[in-house]
Image (tube, rainbow, N blue to C red; front, side, top):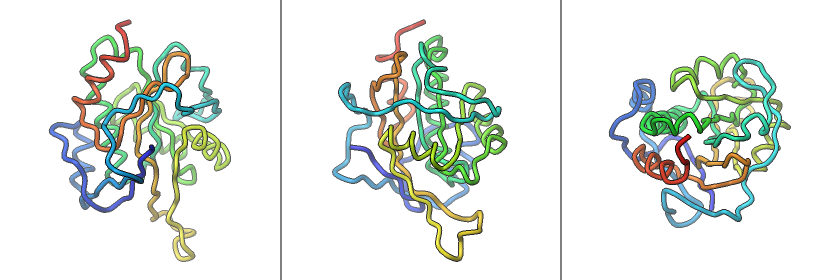
Amino acid sequence: MVQRVHERHEMRRYPSLPVLGVALALSVPPMMWHAEAQPRPAVQDAPQAAFGGPFSLTDQNGMRRTEKDFRGKYMLVFFGYTYCPDVCPTTLAVEAEALGKLGARAARIVPIFITVDPKRDTAQKLKPYLASFGPGFVGLTGTDAEISQVAQAYRIYYRAHLDGRAANSANYSVDHTGNVYLMGPDGKFVAYYAPGILPDELTTDLMRKVPPG
C-alpha cells in the first residue's frame, strides 16, 4: 500500500541530517504523514509487486537517461519536487545520511529523484538543488506525459494544487506519494520505504539487501 504525502502539518523528528535538510526542515511549519490505510512498517518487501518500469527522462545535466543506464546498480527512487517545503528535503537528507554510513556499498546505489512538478523543475533547477545533498544524486525531469508515464509505472499519486488564481503562479504545492523505492541491479522492485523512515532504519535495511561491491 503506497502512502501519500500532504504538506503543512506535523512530521517525525530526525536526530541528525545534512545541513541543508535541517535548515529547510526548520524553516517551514511542521507537517504530518497521512496514509491511505493503517500505518505501515517502515520497510515493505514485496518481490511480486509490479513497481517500476521503463522510462526516458532528462537529468540535471541535460542528458537523456533511461532505466537501462542504471543496470548493474541499485536504484533508490524517490518522487518529489524542489519547491517542496519539508517532505522532500527531509527524505533526501535521510537518503544522504544513510548512504554516507554504507561505506563501499554506497557505490552500488544510485539515489534518483524524479520530479512530479516538471513545470518548475527544469534541469537547471534540479542541478543545484540535488548538489546540496551529495554528488551522487541523479535528478530527472521531462514533459508532463513522460512524468505521468513513469509515475504510473511506480504507482505514484501526485496532484498539483492549482486553482484559477494560481494557474499562472509559481506558488503552489503538490501532494505526492512519499515512498522511496529500492530497485535491484536488474531493474526489478526489491522494497519500498515508508514516509518518515529514519536514517538508521534505512541504513540497516540497505546493509541487508545490498551486498558489498
